[in-house]
Each structure stands twice: as structure tokens, then as C-alpha cells.
Image (tube, rainbow, N blue to C red; front, side):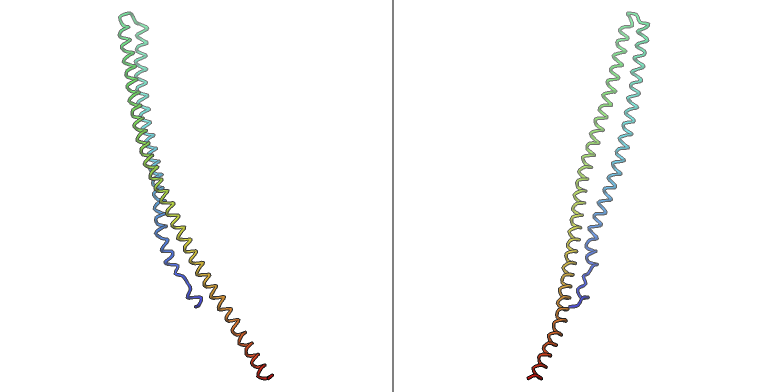
Length: 189
């Protein structure tokens, strides 16, 4: 067996790793897409909060206007306008309470949607993490197997090389020694 005959086929080994590396690349792309989705969700949430703040400001302005009207009427009030002032205050309070409840409901439903999306995204991330870990473990196992095969091949090469060198050193020495003893016995006897 010669040194050249023990060459392993490296093309088949690198081809075996290609699907694993492709899968790892796809998983990393999905992680980047997830990050983009998170940024988009945050921008949407900010827009929704800005709209809600505008509604709160409008409601507060309406309530302030009604309170100012009531205060103006109290300054110029007489006993007959007290019932009207009381009704104005009750209407202002009811409008404020209605708008506050409406905004609270919108916030609550938006938070529930965000939480649901986050739960879905967390599940997706867990799956991606499992896939990445599995891909890495499979790739590392393949690399370890290939390294072990290379090591075994190299060890076989060295074993044959050592045996060949030993035989090349021992056989001529043995023949030479045998020849010397034969000559000695032939000429000395």
C-alpha cells in the first residue's frame, strides 16, 4: 500500500457539510427578519400611543372648557342657575369618564395584542434557537467525525510507513548478516 492510495475524498466531506451550513444560514436570516418585525411593531405601538395621547389632550381640553364655563357661571350665578351648573359639571364628568374608559379599553386591547404577538414571537424564537442549536450540533458532529476519519487515515498511513521503513531497514541488514555468517562458515570451516 503506498502513500498516495490512502488519500481521502475531501469533496464528498465538504459536500456533506453544505446542507447543514445552508440550514444555519437560513436560520440566521430568519433571526434578522424577526428583528425587523420587532422594530416595525414598536413603531406601530408608538403611533397608536401618539393617537391616544391626542385623544386624551382633546378630552382634557373639552373638560377644561366646560369647567371654565361652569366657573364663569358660578361667578355670575344666582339660585336659578345652580341646577344648570350642576348639570354642566355632571355632563363634563361623564364625558371625561367616558373618554378615559374608551382610551383605557383601547390601551388594554393594544397591550393584549402586543402580548399575544410577543408570545408568538417568543415561541418562534425558541424554535429558531432549537434549530440553530441542532444545526450547530449536527455540524460539529460531522466535523468531529471527519476529523476522526482523517486521524484514523493518518494513523494508518503512519503505521504502514513505519512497517515499510522497518522492513526496509531489517531485511537488508538480515541478508547482509546472513551473508557474512555464510561467508565466515564457508571460508573458516
